[in-house]
Amino acid sequence: MTVHHRRVPACAGIGLRLPHLAEVVATRPSAGWFEIHPENFLANPHASELLADLARDYPISVHSVGVSVGSAGGIDRTHLGRVRALVDAIDPMLVSGHLAWSTHEGDYLNDLLPLPYNEETLQIVSMHVDEVQQGLGRPYVVENPSSYVGIASSTMTETEFLGQLADRTGCRLLCDVSNVYLSGHNLGYDPCAYLDAMPPGAIAELHLGGFVAEDDDGNPGQQVLVDTHDQRIAESAWELYAYALRRFGPKPTLIEWDNDLPDVVTLLAEAAKADSIALANLETERRRAAG
Amino acid sequence: MPLADFQAQVRGAIVDGNTATLAPLLTGSRDPLRRFAIHQRHYASHLAQTLVGKFPAMEWLAGSPFMLAAAGAFIRACPPRAPCIAEYGGDFPAFVGDRTEARQLPWLRWVGELEWRLGHAALAVEHAPLALAALSELRPERLADCTLALQPDLHYLAAPWPVDDLIKLFLSDRAPEHYALNTEDVFLEVRGARGAFSMTRLEGGSYAFRSALARGASIGAAAEQALGNDPTFDAGQSLVQIVTAGLTTAIHDCDGEA
Image 1 (cartoon, rainbow over the protein chains, first blue to last red):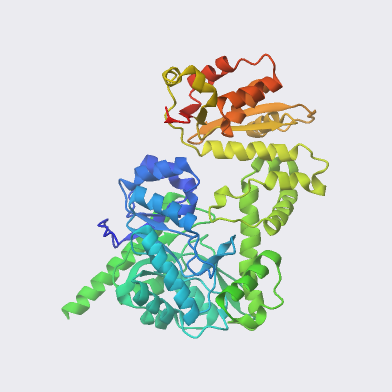
Image 2 (cartoon, each protein chain N blue to C red):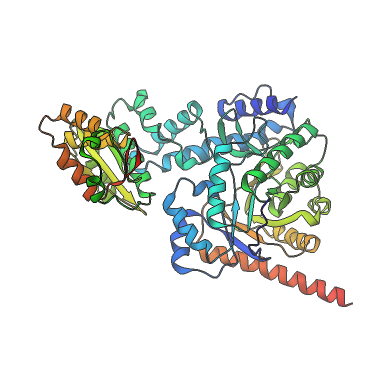
């Protein structure tokens, strides 16, 4: 596998969505890095051209929503090849995707769907992550999903699954802190215990995104948290982010905002907040180390 | 249950709404099927809204409820087959045109067909054009068997309604009190790049020639199609026109690229 030396800054970056692309290219805002979804660029030569220009000045993280490593029927090699071509063109700092599935017998279901966590799934996902890493010629970074339901045939926890996946494939892990909070709320586990169970040495990137609380139709009087990426990050997720930083140390952290997009300034302000929390956390750790 | 079978059940629930056998497979709440509905809703509403968002002129003309209902039916009948959703929906205008509800709007399909091509033209990046001199480097007797590569931002549409006029109305954001739309064959060439696009009406012969070249026909075969449409069609002059207009990027003969 090729070793890449692209700088991976341990600071916050923002998602770069197409409505902001021209503005960002023109104004070159002060941002630590940008994250893109390759699926938005593969069918858009004009946007790809602008992205290649930006990639000369900013680190880029490529986050695929279409490489379905959890599909029993295999991954879409044509799509992987297209992602590879984009990756080769912009030399991103990281390439990531989800512990989920989205294709079945050729149908693309346009969602990140849950997997049973058991040995069969682990073998299938490991095989596909190996294939992705071979196909991309670089390590893949796998993100924990946002969950609303569990799967009855699971025999291990999500963190056990992710840990074994990293051990078997050498992939890195992307810890979406908001997903940990949301899934913990929805499925009734302790988010801090979840972070404690993640292998810290495998963590390459963190995510923070907005979610909404809805009435939980299945549990009258209760609420379910839904991963919408359409608003500011909740205070509860910021608190868990501080905990994650203490556990994992400073990491590149993405502000994820995909729907009801605000202006770029608002996104950068959220990134600045993440950086200030990381800085405060670092100071606390320094003081603690100094006794 | 093997993973493949589990995923088949989930696919059935997402696309077809068939959740009859899914409940025992899920945990995590008193009624996990209701939680699972978040995924069903995401597929149905998000995809339908994305699809309708690609056809703003159709929506302007037919209304959001009509379009969302058509999109909902389309995503059940024809789920996406690849992760680039930007490429999904090319068949949607024809699907809309076949719906009973669209019988009163026979031009709507053609608005969508044009809108799809305009949308794709605007995303393109043009390539370096072929120099006219490249034609003279070929032996004249070989020319008829050659094919031309056209700019990636070029699209062609023959429509039985003057839908380019409707699109212009939409783009001008003007809704006249009365607008008489009469059947009329129009032959359209769509160009665009880097966010911009334009539409041009062509004569029948030129349209036949250029659209045949775009489909990969040889110059000779394209000229025959054009002459079938218009016996006065001048293939040589038309060839020079499209090359000098920068519409071509390469010429290929059986020996390779010139």
